[in-house]
Length: 167
Image (tube, rainbow, N blue to C red; front, side, top):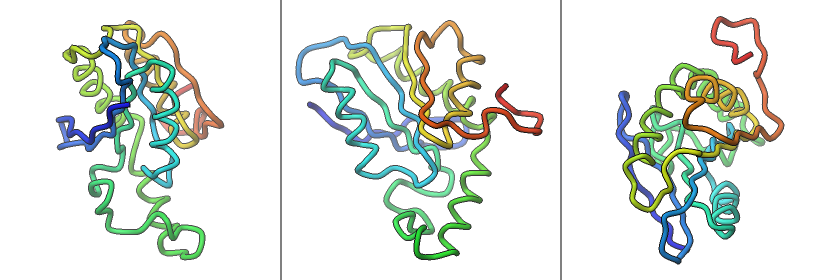
């Protein structure tokens, strides 16, 4: 597999994104994995690699890029179980990462895919992992002509009392 860390320009800045694709010549169908609250880590990169090993071009964007690059957050997500301050920081960052922001970012992710010669255009897939279950519903509604397959793994906040509730 071929792995890279790239920056995708969004309206709010550069989103560092892990991408992986098969060694063979493409183009490949594309899948975007939307991370969970503990942020980008090896477990999520392994999920991307597994999907890529089945013939997919996989993107794993850092949805928390507004507070720092994957390796330079102002707090350490690996300490969330032991340190209440880190846990509170994670919850605040998760809550600040709204459906509206992720839907806007997704426009940039889709633009990247649409202009990538390694990717089969359209018919994209997306996976929401825990906190990102809500985003999957929102992006599916916002970009129905682009996404053909969406999956939420134990997604949260799919129905809330807030105005941007995905339901």
